[in-house]
Length: 259
Image 1 (cartoon, one colour):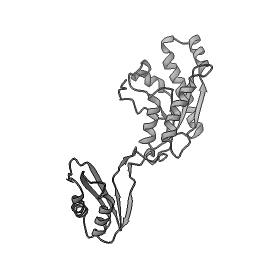
Image 2: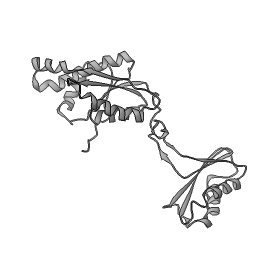
Image 3: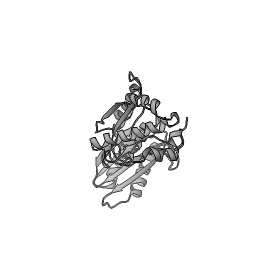
Image 4: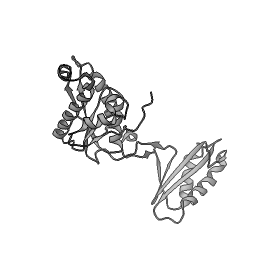
């Protein structure tokens, strides 16, 4: 779970040893890794924090020399296994695995946003980017166009995939609005060529009101990508957001969707 927490760059399962001198670290490394490296080429990577009478290079050399007889040799460029030592004050942390985290900013450090999420791929990805890099709590809004609302199923499916995995520490709020009456209004009163633009314009206004009501004053998030569909040209995007009094974030705007 920690590997899915925004703000975490990496994590490693470690074995901690208290030491008084460099030789204590060497002995710990031999105890920990002598069997692990048999028949393998290895490299020792050391990082040190604190005041010591030795350097990181001293640790790497001493540990490497002690382990070499148990192995197939040292290879700093293309080792079969990497051995990591983190020296902090009077403790040495030994590990062999580095699990990458998502990085970014800790969730919630930059406020709250409301994402307009459909049952597709782009909008949840856009929300993920804002959660990761923006460090923002993200709630979601879906506009159902069907009755009965069978399209809600896909919205719930993608929302669950996004938030159950990545919104650790925060329970997002999901808002579902019945937008089917809008379709009848557009059909009766609007130019068919303008339906998609009109619909998004109304959706933006509704979303901005919902965002204000829940304190998501950071703005709205959408999965729009420039030119992907007709409503996402520069002119149409400008028309859609005209008059909306909060920021609209489009983290995918310049990306090309690979299908």
